[in-house]
Image 1 (cartoon, rainbow, N blue to C red):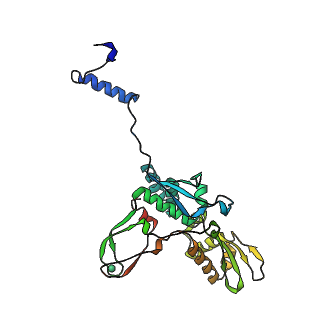
Image 2: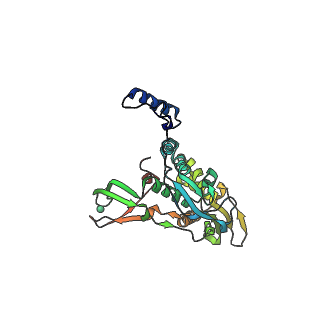
Image 3: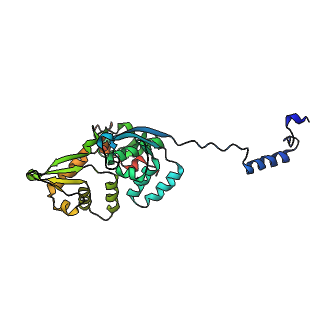
Length: 288
Ligand SMILES: [Zn+2]
């Protein structure tokens, strides 16, 4: 054998299969010359937030709208299914933490996610769902609430209407109360949602509403124009009249941007009736 072919140590697999296999095994165990398996980066997506992220303290004119999410991986699945045992709040928080890459020019963090409007968090969930499972949500046996017929129903994510704020400053607004008073209110953010979800198992709906109002009601303006700061005061939220509380809650609901899951409807061909479709986080992530 000619030395310039660098065949020194070469084992012809046909004449000496044992030596060739041993050489391959040695190479694999050393790992030196074996190409590492390529691990594809999870698929992701970029999109615009419907509300806008205003970082701590916040100038509404500097709201950021660009967001990026990625496909959930097996490691995420393990974390998310484990978090599920801790309740819906932990489940959603972990989904968002796993799937969110960045908002504006900031990497995702717990602080960032807690400062996002609920509608922006809902939008992130929708896009994480799209990156992970695709556009189509399928119910194999959907039962029509009018005629009872079971059929396969599919809805694409683009059929879910998205409400957008025309300006980031719309997250704070006035609500007319009874007897000439006005409330100055802000839209709830992730931190509010987490606080409410933390008590959801042991608190009544009224108690949850008290907590939400006490967090989101900034001040009350009296008919004479004097303004009293009442933020973070559950006793004040309890002292409000029932109608005033409802007006505040309705305004929050009406103004929250994001995917409007309760506005999806379709007409069932067989019975000709309109069916409202309620899509929750469980439907978006049917596998988890
Ligand atoms: Zn029907």
